[in-house]
Every structure is written in C-alpha cells, then in structure tokens.
Length: 154
Length: 344
Image (cartoon, rainbow over all chains, first blue to last red; front, side, top):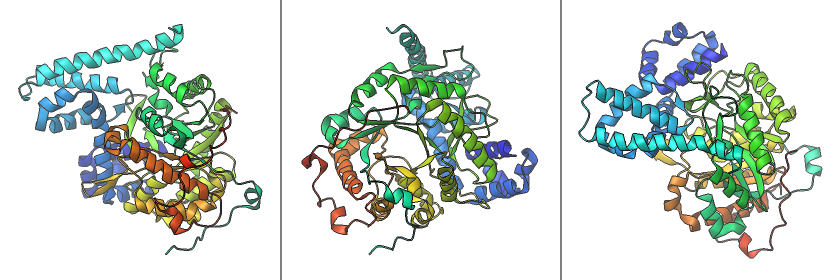
C-alpha cells in the first residue's frame, strides 16, 4: 500500500544500515511493511541503485543543517564524537522537525541525557551545550512571540 | 552543434497566443535584499517560500497558534515586492504523500497571500517530503523522495490540487524533483504525469532544469529526452541553480551558478516554451559571500538573454548566448511595470 511504500522509502533513506540489510535480504522490506509485489521490487531497485548512498548523504546533510546552524559550539566541542552521537539521535528520531529551533532543542536534550547517563564525551561539551541550549531556548521562545505580535499588530 | 528539437510543436491555441517575455527573478532568501540593492533592475520577479516565513509548531499546537510569522522577513518581502511579480513556492504540503491535505497549512499560505497582496501563482514540489507514518505530525523525510507515477498517485495529487485551488484561487504549478534513485516499473514517466496534470487543467509545470541535470547525473532520464516528452505548453516557470560534487555524487546544493550543460539545454529548448511566466534563480544564502552580488548580477543578466529567446520557437544563435553578446537589461529600456499581484 502507498503509505507503507512511502514510509519504507523514507526509512531506507534515513538508515544506511537498513539499506545494507535490505541488500543482503531481499525479502526484508516486504516482511516489515505492507507492500505490493511491484512496490517491493521498486524498493529493492532503489536500495541496489548507486544513488541510494547519495540519498542517504543528503538525508544526513539536511538533518545536520539545523544543528550546525544553531549549535555550533556544541558541534565543535563534540568533534569526531558528533558522528556517532548524531547517528544515535537520528536512529531514535528518524524524522526531523520542520521548526529548526524545536529540532535543535530536541538534540540538546538528547546530548544532555547522554551526559547525565555518563556518556564519554569530549571535555568542553557540557559547557558548550549549556551556552547553545540557553540560546536555542531563547530563540524558540522568541519565535512564539511572533504570532502574538501579529495578532496584536504590535 | 546542437541536436534538433524533437518535441511536439505547441498546440495551435498556444501558438495563437501573443508571446510574452517571462520575468527574470530570484527565489527569495535572506541575501536577496543585498542582490536587489546592487542589481534591482535585473530582478523583475520574486518567489517566496511560505515555509521560510513562519515557524511551524505543528498540528498539535493550540488553535490559531501553529504558525508564527517571522514578521521582519514579511515586511522586507512586502517592500521588495513592490513593482515586481510575486509568486509563492511551497515545500511543506508534500502533495504526493499518502496523507490528507494539511488544511491549516493551506489557510496559512492564504493568509500570507493576503498579507502580501496576492500571489501570481503558487508552486509545490512533485516529491514526497512528509512521511505517512511519521511519529511527529509535521516531521519531514529529510529530502524529497521520488514518487511512482501511476494512477493512484495521480488521483491523490489531483484531488489535493482541486482543493488547493478552491482555497488559494491562484494558478498552481508542480516542480520536477531531483532524484538519486529512479523508481522502476512506473506506468507513466514524470513528463507524462506533468502533461496529464496540465491537460486536465490541474497544474502547470515548474521545470527545474538543475533538478533535471542532477537526475540525469544519477542515472535518470537524459535531459533532452525528458524535454522532448514534456508538453512545452505546460511549462510556466523555470528554475535555474547550481550544485557541487561531494563524495562522488553531484548534489543539488544550490551552492553556486548554473552549470554550462544546463545553460545549453535551456537555450536549446526554451524557445519552444510560449507560456513561461518567470525564470527564477535559486541559491543558498550561505554561499552568497562566495558568489557575490556581482556574480549573481551576471547570472541574472544571462537569464535576461535567455528570457529574450523564450517562445521564439527557434533556438537562439550561439553568439547571442555568450556572456559577451547582447546588451544587458540594464542598458535597455525599462521593462513595463509587472502586472499587479492578484489572488485570482
């Protein structure tokens, strides 16, 4: 069915691991989604196409954009640790929120939780996160005020 | 030097229409005011993305509190749009997704239209951005996913376009996507799908030539083949943009100027397009410092030369294509004032 087919496409794009699993096991997608035989063949052709890697790259670039824009200090402090942390974050939240401050705030919470649970992250992450998190929260609150101004004409 | 144009000729009705030169303009971004400050006479039209003019708190927000407008940007656009053609270019409706039409989103677009004095037309993407089983109602898939061009998707898109037109009142266009993974076994090609939408009076085509180039680079249809199949009368707007290579792939990153193969195909085929309203250049504002106002102005000047040959039915001579040929629009008589913005 169409909804499952579209969701399966999105899930593949968000997960290079799922792409690899589907390449190794051609029946995988049909077991996890309600697909017509043609839809299953289309998905299989997608994962085996060389451009699938590009789709995964673009997905990751687009997910990274709000974090790179709004959490520069945190990303810099994380350094090479950003990649596995972002992977874990995107696995838990495979869909981005269109509101960049909400998306950024959610990643801040995720990093803060990781720190609280004793994750070994580079020195300086906690301090950078505190600054970025406060800034994002302020921006998020500011974005809520815009409608009020619009409503009052102020 | 140039392959012959093999596409069917425009319909007699379209051929009888007086040729109108399309406007040249920009997809609005935060760098647009600077471009206009430096080369305002080259910018005849603006296309604005509603999704970038508000903060969307999602369908779960309290009634009337979902969309919070970025008022500074709205004021700026209202100022810059005076005397220019204005259109809207959406990304958030995701019409081919197997989801109901987002009525609140449409109402918000209409609100923007009223605030800005009306849109000449409204365009959306022929791609899946929203996922049907997303855990967050306004979550995005992360990129535009390809669609299967079949009757099921056509019916879905057609129904939403009808409701959209009832609400917005203005002309609607759909844009071809940049796809990295073509979907096999489609009953229709993408041009056939767009032709059918046009033939049924549901939507015109926003032809993104750079998207076409990206798709071709990733194993999609050859640009010339695609354009030979596309009804030239369906095409009402052209997007031009640049990209870059990354990790062995060519990206639709809007990181620079239109590549030469895209210019070649544009000068080759746009003479057949008699119903074009606008040629629009897209760039990502973070690349603007490297591109510079002078660079963007040169791109716009070349677009004006392209606009001159639209609808002439004969490819423009090679000499006239080059950056040195033909006077720039700044040296010509001023273009008549664009028609007033309207919602209908």
